Length: 326
Ligand SMILES: [Zn+2]
Image (cartoon, rainbow, N blue to C red; front, side, top):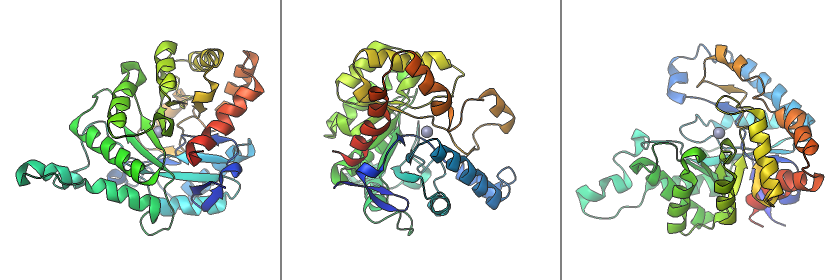
């Protein structure tokens, strides 16, 4: 029986159940939090708030979330491990990788391939072994193993830093078989750029989620990516600033009608706490929470012809295939 790594240890892939493939718990600027902890406030209050929200999420029928919070997003596994013990009815799959739209973190500036030119030789990227260690040995001494790899490409495109991270993620994937999720910017068709590089590194598209695909309403572009074998992350339900609830939902409905239910996964990209946004602005995003799919989106999809079978495919079967590789 194929197993999937979660915060509480490996589980059988048939125990994953309804799975949201892209939900953060805490999204934080680690350096800022170390120095300006006022907004975060009381650690215990933040943990009980997260436990409450994740308990409600599990109460809505969701059995598993993938938390793609990696370096650059303030990953801190001891806190997540504590929360996982307090919400035993929810499986949490954590990730390794690096989140940047531009440069690599300064830590990597004078390591590995950055030294190729000066030394006149090809050096391996230390990121690869760090990611593999997170997958095989566990993260930062916690014993919690990563079940997903994560990188990003946004409007700046394939910068040197983005390319370095994406190649390191691809190489860690080839070494371990752990699936990849890529933050993409579908309006500028960055999925195609990622597709080319991942192909160059020998990655099978069927092991890759192109995250935030649901930000686009271009069904032809999305169909092209799905036909190549990629998974489409329709994973920002509730972020209705540049788009609307209906536009996001109608894109899923349109893709189901084209026969692509077997290529999509659903999620919110929500957090219990994110320090990227002035808390006073959060009321502008009233639907951006863990329950929006179950409360609002899925009823709308059903009303517009998406079948129970298609929903099961997107919520259960597709995540299981991605996470187990089966
Ligand atoms: Zn995210």
